Amino acid sequence: MLSFLPGPILYAISLTLLIINTIVWSSLLSIGGIVKLLLPVKTIRLGLSHLMNRFMWCWAVCNGGILALISNIEWDVEGLENLDKNSWYLLISNHLSGFDIAAQTYLLRNHIPMLKFFLKQELMYVPIMGLGCWALDMPFMHRTSPAKLRKNPKLKGKDLATTRKACARFKHLPTSIINYVEGSRFTVEKHQRQQSPYQHLLRAKAGGIAFTLSAMGEQFTSLLNITLVYPDAKADEDILYGVMNGRVKKVVMRVEILPVPKVDPEVYFSQAEYRAEFQRWLNDLWLEKDNQIDGILKQYADKSITSNEQ
Image (tube, rainbow, N blue to C red; front, side, top):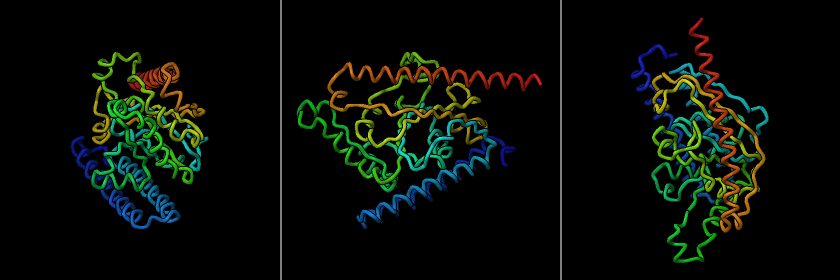
């Protein structure tokens, strides 16, 4: 609607609206978190959890409205047909931008439970953000350092037990946990520094997903393998900035439903070969994803050439 405006003006408008949208819903989440703290009754907390998830859904819908206002984004999405809002999912995805979370939350909002993330324990004490994430039942985990484990071997397994306790609430509430297994956003510099064997991806790290599966693997219905591509984004461009100023207009997402891999936590954390086998499984999945991304980019490049010739 406003896509005719110059990029800097679009960026200013979208930034202002996104900040307002986030403040409004974060404030409501924080209020809900305070109520949860003051009324620690199971039925009340469960009802509030449903309400908090609805607030996050509203945040995602408003983000979509802002995008529709500033840019005519082309959403190319496949694989949503057999998803269920009343199921439990573990999602793994490549990671390209700070926009990824907003895009995935918006596109998946009516198909699966609202996305949740494993967060570091320290984030719980960040003003507003920590309380809001707690109100959304985001699981906070504490990771004991190797140095502390060497000093006190009795701490081994405590992190997993604590995380399992934090995830126990999800037995009564359909949940989606997302894990960006590359560990950080893709950049050309990181790709070169890692000497990544993939053309479009960083190396995948198996530890985070193995920890999640060890903590609550039996609760998941399916594993969702998510692939994100921004075909018209330039190499190493700040994609979030490109979306907000109306330059990046194409978002491709592919969803593949896979069975949940089983991880034996005792064996995984004690046997190197077992960990290596799980890493090989993830590497094979990442190689397929890399080839898929390459095919999507070539498909859009061919479309662009054909359009220009016409």
